[in-house]
Image (tube, rainbow, N blue to C red; front, side, top):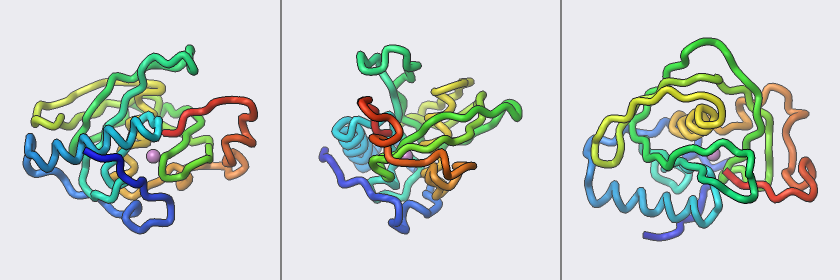
Length: 177
Ligand code: NI
């Protein structure tokens, strides 16, 4: 288990389509997840995708617990999601601010589907099947975009809504994600 360097926007690997996991519950998969978990914790992120630490496989983790810094933030259960499939319930979308460990120090407004049905597997191969909305749906869409080579700035509709976090939100302690 080790804290890994997070690839930053501009690295070609972040633009690749990630490959599916073919075998669950392997030492290699557990090591990858430990590396991702430690890196996410070290960087204080809300989620991380395997390609961000240089591994082009369909593995993401995410989770937002209660945090005194964000008393109003919606919590998202800690989740390991492998080989995900996203299904959007309807056309409803909402705008929200996002950041990314691969785009450090910046924030942008990204439209995401409000409601989401997602499926996939955990690290042991157990199926995951959830209907979510709001911030949980946003985090899943952001992380799964990393598996198809999409970074959030590519989804910003108006680049006026993109900038440096400390300029956009002076005097606030904003989490990277
Ligand atoms: Ni990201």
